[in-house]
Image (cartoon, rainbow, N blue to C red; front, side, top):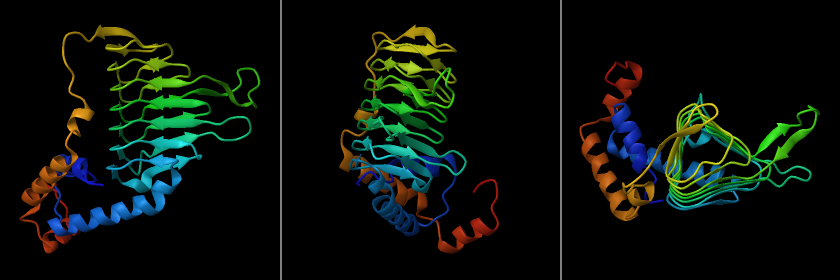
Length: 253
């Protein structure tokens, strides 16, 4: 769990001021780790090492076939829970498999009645919906699940805010789906698709990409650097100052 709070530092220190003293933040991080170990991890078929979980009580797992590999970052929110669902009822054995270095942000819903495979270093933005099923028959609306077809993301795919990925879709390596898109057909690698239905906007050519895998290439050094940043940014904070910020917050807090 070396990188547990690395991306939390980015979220907390640069989006809003963190008024906690360093020792208090370290204590809160330990409590967060304990919650993940005791309550979140047992819900997964597999949950890899080195994860960062922001507000893990808003990460909801349904079903018994959800697996995530090493160094994920999953961000929950009270008004936008992350929901990972494998439908394991009757003839259906839904499965979700997510690779290393993934980023899953608030409001993301992934629902599998057959199989959804997400490769390494994929990023899924706020409110995206990924499903491998219709969830009801077209003519028999009482029929649960309906037609299914697997969904696959190859490595380093980026799904934009509020996009919908429909059943049977494969998205190729390095490709980007623009915000609000509805993807009903396969997307080739190194492409940007957007719209409803999603269409080719641009091909990615001639530029080497820096991915989340590169970001995590030296986990120990990264964890150390972020801890030093924490010490620096929180060094002037006090317990009394933090309590005052809770009682009487202002625009700078």
